[in-house]
Length: 487
Length: 83
Image (cartoon, rainbow over all chains, first blue to last red; front, side, top):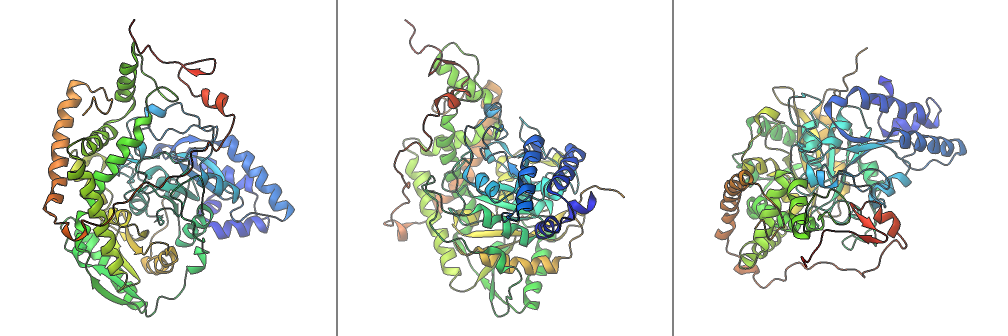
């Protein structure tokens, strides 16, 4: 079983083609691993019957000689993607019994590509958070050290991939929610260009920022999964009608002679731990040795990314979450009047962080404050996008750490929301700036926790993420992922 | 704000949220220091719209399966008027 779990996507496809093992054997191995690692609480819902049925379908296609691109690949799906007839909770009591009557575009696309869905993974409630500690479904634990957070909000997906209970996974990234947990869990995570992957059927948090993205064990695997996830969707009005390149072809391409920018404003950020600064220097050396020119660049407005993000994201969340009223679906509190039903349903159904963000968003959109906060944040967003446009005239990609620190202890979680929001200081600019980024495991902290380096590329140039990401992967010498298996 | 957001909050929630929100608004107020004169005339992003067409026809029964309370083809809710 150990051998199955350690194979990457290409090796699994080769093994299935050569009939070394069957899809059912592979899926059963993953279902056993899910059971073995259940204390990590990666999954909200495991779907063994569906997985084994999908496995049979895959086997028949292999037998007919017409496998799809990811035929038989075991995949976990963040519980923010609507999956038809499968419970979808967004880790919230208010959706505790919601069974979607339809499938999200991205989960449908990866299923059409042949993946086998193992189940729905845990997240911060409504994708709001960076620790995967929702009140309703409980905290997920970091497989490298179960006393530590795996990051969030796609923490369940990151845990599943890092603990060998999924070969790859779907997540969503609004302010870093794929990249940050990927970094904390020692796996690869990608925030594609906004609009590259459809948002239709994704439980909405911030509609101008939400971006589905892949989590995987290697840069190549992430590229293969992103190929399956991407593409124009007429049902999503913000979906980009852009050709989907073969991202995996960029893996291993030479970077010699290309230019890597290091944002000096971020370097001077005093929230970065010494270990993270050392990792960043290690990353610069990797690219120098690969023949790149390292260029110091400036993104002067990027320091305003976090406050503008929290204004915009909370405003959009306050609007999006108005739909949860106990009328049409989900949890409904007992009440005598309609108004009481609304307020009690939402008061009891939402957790504390969600309520906090709804109130922030309601305030910034309210009469008298709209221009001071929301309009201003929109203009700041434009400035940050112009910063990135300017910098990408000078360099091909940017190199930064993904997180300011390694994963922290669940017992030492900051109770001040502003301190917590600083976890996203290095990832949020990518979302606000409308560019694309990848986190690649690059080293370990002095307590054995993974650290990630982030490559940032211009919009619609994800190939550069995989091209440059390979350099980090090759230079990192990471130990094996903690599957917890013993001989 | 809670009334505007249709959120019922318990008294202990209110006091802790007041503290948290003060900190957040103090933090985001650093945007006030920015001079945005240079881009004041630039258009702001607008919502991208599409035709309002239901992607799936005849889904009423399936949709009603998730209803907390329904009667025939209607979602049922507590009274609106106290007559």
